[in-house]
Image (cartoon, rainbow, N blue to C red; front, top):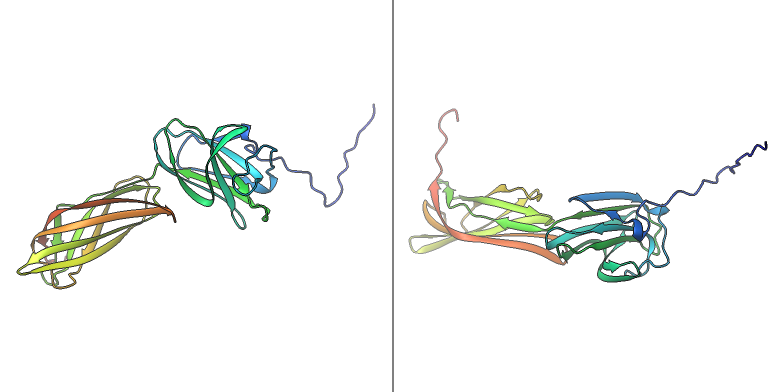
Length: 257
């Protein structure tokens, strides 16, 4: 019998295994949204047939996504310290058709039943840290206006409200204008309200409105509400609600209330 000793030199580490989704054939399947994955980019490799749609392909990892609903989806591929490319394709290995090439966050229109392959790759001039990949969608936004509002009879400040439902729309704002005829004047005032969370859950919104050329009073008024969210610099989603509402005087708080 012969004993075999395995020697390691001080300061020399064994090569780490590449990520499980390092190769196109081993792409991670995105089966539920929202989806987030983190893999060590420094251990990723490059296949000879990796596409070069985004200025080359260095240290690539792959994801596979087949949406069940048609719509706009938002994907992000990043890496420390400077970022990463995110490329989206359809087709098969060796015959891929580019859909999107970007860095950071991208929004693209996806068809239900079509399989998309998403490749995250490092910048050629920047060794990657951990790759972070996220995917969510489809993006949607819906805003409503309540038919009943309130007005403070002492100050003439009105309050309008409604609901907003948004998903994957990034920073989302509600803006609008309230108008009311009071005598010969048409009192007008703008308002704005930020939507703190966009996760597909209907949420209440409310905004105080101060007249720019007078004070509001109880009675009939009209309002227009615009909701808009932008997942990236090039893609925005919006919805509009407008109609007639009745402003009712707010009840003054009694003693001890």
